[in-house]
Each structure stands twice: as structure tokens, then as C-alpha cells.
Length: 271
Image 1 (tube, rainbow, N blue to C red):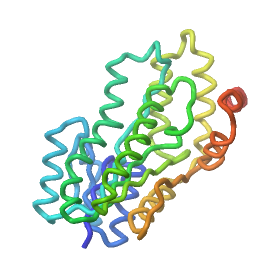
Image 2: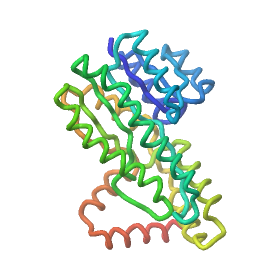
Image 3: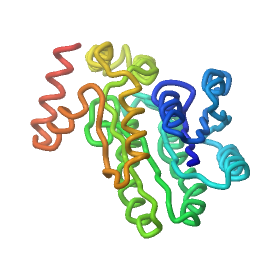
Image 4: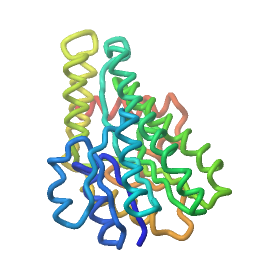
């Protein structure tokens, strides 16, 4: 039986992915800081791990436990992450660094811990959950988008490094998904930059993100991740969810200034 580790599994995409991989026949380890929120997963036969992706000791213990119990890891789903918005001049650098710790360095450290076991097996799949925000940009989201741009570049280089060992690296680019992410991002943005010089942009972007009522369910992404995990020859990137394909298409064909105008126009419309 193949073994999968899913981070950020206490809610949203991670939680649903753990369920879908379990249905697909995997022994699934669901990892998150909030273990008490994963009781439902444990009831479905999913093995729950307390893991903080900003703690090296926590990650090393978690991977060690999986290897001790199963002897292998076949799929790593790096899903843990969050969005913290605000104007670059307003966001404290400690907050910016923490976002990189969670979204980039935690992901990279788990790769370091898991890759040796996959190399020994001569097989494995690393699925990094990025975002369409790894290809597009928006005002007040500079630090978040920076982390996702970093995940995209890291994944491309990693894919070439691990290819000789039979290990695939896949990037997932969700669009609008009904999770806690949007509410947290908007709350942080209002707290950081609301009421000041950027207040108008805050209100406009909050209105734009308010369209999340039209967002896709987490299962849309969980199904894509499961497909990527199961595919004999997976694609390097999968995009899915509300607005993902139109936004990525627009970014691909429009010059920077034209995309700027498109995005600012959408903000004015919804804000």
C-alpha cells in the first residue's frame, strides 16, 4: 500500500485531499498544528500527525514516525500555507519572514526530509500546492505572491534535480476555493493597511475577494491532487478552481500594462 503525507490537513484543501487519497487506497498521514480539528479524519482511518512546518524538530519527528511505521513515503503533498495581505510599507518584516517560513521554507524542509527515502525507493511524487498567485499578482498581496512565485521556481528546479531518481514534482495552482484562506487574508489586510493611505485599495480588493461566494469547493483541488498522485506520467502543473484558467490565460497573453489595467478594472468593479 502506498503512503502519502498531506500537510495543512486540518481544514479545506488539505483535509479533503487526505480523504480522497484514503479513498484511492493510500495509507494517509494528515499533518497540521491543530490536531483537535482532525478527529473526523482519524475516524475515517487516516493517521493524524501534529506538525508545525516552521519547526524543524516537528517535521523531522513526523517524517521519522512515518518511516518507522511504514518504511516508505510515496507521495508528499505540501499544502500548508496562508495568505497575509497588506501594503509592502505597512507589513512588518517579521510577518513577511514568517509567511516565507510557512509557505516556502517549511515546504522545502519537508522535501529535504522526504527526498532521501524516495531516492532509495527510486520512486515518489512531490505535489506542491502553489496558487494562480504564483503566476499573477495584485496590489497589497506582494508578500503572499512572493512566496508563491518562489514555490513555482523552487518546484521547477527540483523537478529537474529529482527526475534521474524516478521522483516527479508537480505544481497545483488553485483559483478561488471556499476555504478559510480568503477570510484570513482580508482580515489581515484590513488590520494592516485599512484606514490609511491604502484604504481605498483595501476596500476595493476586499470587494474583489468577496466574490468567493462563487468559489469552488475544496474537493475540486483534492481531486486534481489525487489525479496528479495517481497519473503514470503527471503533468508538471495543474490549475483548477474558480477563475483559475481565465486568469492564467490572461496573464499569458497580455503585456504587463494590459494585465495591470485588467486587474485594476476588476477591483473597481467589485470594490
